[in-house]
Amino acid sequence: MNLLALDTSTEACSVALLYQGNIMALDEVCPQQHSKRVLPMIDRLLAESGLSLHALDGIVFGRGPGSFTGVRIGVSVTQGLAFGADLPVFGISTLAAMAQAAVRLYQASQIVAAIDARMAEVYLASYRCGTTGILQPLSSEQAIKPPQLAPIGLTGKVIAVGTGWQTYASELQRAQPAQIANDILYPSAQDMLSLALPAFTQGLFVAAEHAQPVYVRDDVSWKKLPGR
Image (cartoon, rainbow, N blue to C red; front, side, top):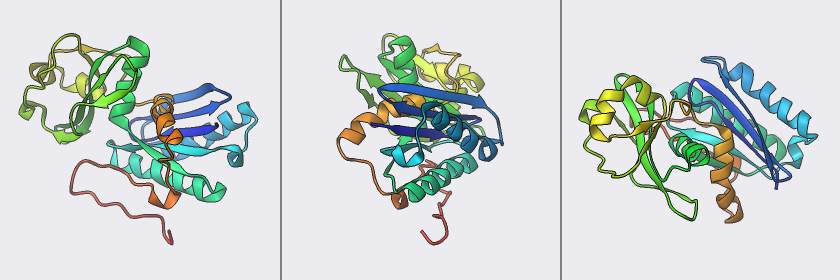
């Protein structure tokens, strides 16, 4: 199968392509430049692979949580590409993608992912990866002020990923002692591809009009593209 993945939910802009069983990826930290960078990055991967958009089997997108504007850009770009090429889509949690990166790079079995959500809050969730290699959530995604976070209660080795651990290390360490992975600050589209593969084989991809962001905060609404 051929799948494209993209994420613009944080300061990073990330695209990846699954082609002939291999993953090609581009990651750039480019705050407030996502709308300018994401399409050229996609074009570059498609050109390097020799694929056209119509040769894809689906598009994977980072559904959030993250920057409200960034999440909206990612969903809108996904919808535009998918409508044009009549492709199904699937959304992946940005927190889960960072946890999957810890599995890929550190063979982590317990992960707490936290994104700096501004306004003195983090987006946070915890995960476990068993011997099957399948990532499972241990908690729901939440937006919370770090000092208000209750003890998470994981024992043994825990890997911490995301910008939230850079900004609020001491507060988060009080809730869950963990080894901070300083090289996993943002979600990467290549890890979204890994998480989306089971969903594709299970027929869980949906029509582009059903692509939905997840903001976690309750006071944010989403409007679909005009006419969709």
